[in-house]
Image 1 (tube, rainbow, N blue to C red):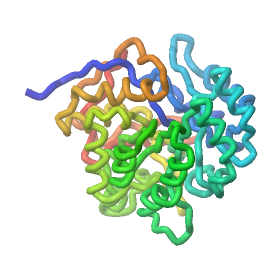
Image 2 (image 1 turned 180 degrees about the horizontal axis):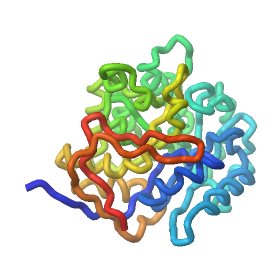
Image 3 (image 1 turned 90 degrees about the vertical axis):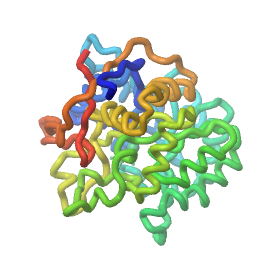
Image 4 (image 1 turned 60 degrees about the vertical axis):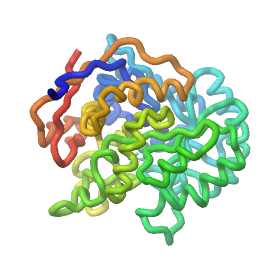
Length: 348
Ligand code: NCD
Ligand code: ZN
């Protein structure tokens, strides 16, 4: 008999884009409904590069939460060559920074201010290693001659392996991994190396972006890879290995900016992610391991207690789409896997 419902401890999202201003006001509720904490990406314009900016951003987030919400945003610092190690360390000591984020310059949305040469931030990494502040990595090579589907694998060889050799005790999260090579790197690595996996990379391969026409809403960075890579990600996610945990990379863009000559990268999945993960674990006959992936392994890596409370998921008749997320700026398409979604979160 098919399992019809599932209760798990409340999960966290270890990688989310909440944006700012009207967009923040619009999308925050989706994340706060299903997740108790979230690692909030700092790629605003301008990026969050100081403790003061993170504090102000955190206040804006908290100010938009309904009074009854217990959602806690965990803030991150966008690493640039000008980030001051003392400020970063002070922000961490004060409980404001939970991690710092490495964007190779030009790798993705709002990464222009990122890092051109890793050596530029070695003093910051040195300090992070010493104080135990995790480094979150968007792991794609930006070398112009590298094929877009090889960017993650090339990054591992050219940048990540040397970085890990130079900073063996640095805590690293290899974010939104998309390839077999990334799974293999994490499995083989010594030290505190983990990875997050998104729902969409578990559910689509690169063909899905071109199924009967171009599908801009399935375009994100790192871009989805071949089927063999998707299967490797699924294997890692359901394996029970604590180094692989939940991070949605929910990245909202207005519908009209994705359906565009030069469409933005990013999938908005905040409202469907938990159901998607449940569907993946269900398909892999691993529902019993969802709670570890969603609610235990992330806190363990970050040295935080698991959340109190639970969330209930239930199996439903498959839906092919969810309504667009309404916003005063325009609609935002919600991610649903091409084959439909047959789980949902039961409203508390
Ligand atoms: C993200 C965004 O829109 O900010 N886009 C994406 O495709 N994932 C940036 C990122 O995480 O790469
Ligand atoms: Zn992201």
